[in-house]
Length: 233
Image 1 (tube, helix red, strand yellow):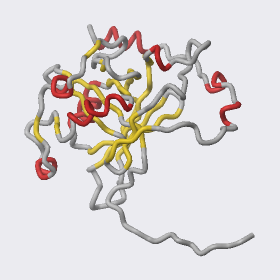
Image 2 (cartoon, rainbow, N blue to C red; image 1 turned 135 degrees about the vertical axis):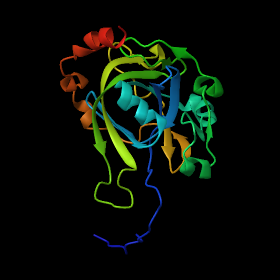
Image 3 (cartoon, rainbow, N blue to C red; image 1 turned 90 degrees about the vertical axis):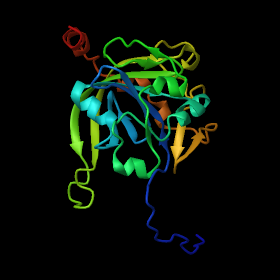
Image 4 (cartoon, helix red, strand yellow; image 1 turned 90 degrees about the horizontal axis):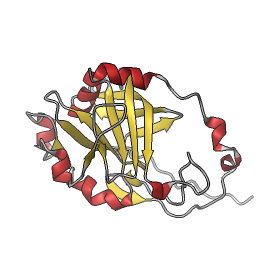
């Protein structure tokens, strides 16, 4: 086998956003108004989702207070709406570190983004009609990050969520299946190093794709209906 020299170099980037889906998180402010915040530090495993935030931001505070949110997943076609939310915050007053980055307080996030609120089934925060995917979620646990780093301790938090209801646009459903999403039709908006991208065509067959998707299914949770009646009583 022919060897070649290693071309890797050691660097110290300020961020490590190598490419993750954009999420518009809707939550409820203390005054009852809806908040809508774009973020991309998100990943899923089964019915669980982990979201990473700056601990002082309005959205994680809302979720921890109410225990509820909706994860609205935009496609590449909603990029301009997501961008209209850039440098806006539901926090009032605006934290000093966000003022330094040019943020401003915006009480009407749906209006500024030109998006439409829809009622949710199991949680109080609204869904975003224009997004092809809506994931209603409830808070499971709070995980502080960087606890061993004195410089960053207390500044970052990961919220563990449980998905309790999934809504998808009919246009991205897989033909012949009631509960599957067609990855050739779903084109999520991706954030990579502060820039918007979309997915291209499949680049290689996947052996994991040979496993029936139903093999990953777990019993559906029964708690949402009971929690909804309590939350809205």
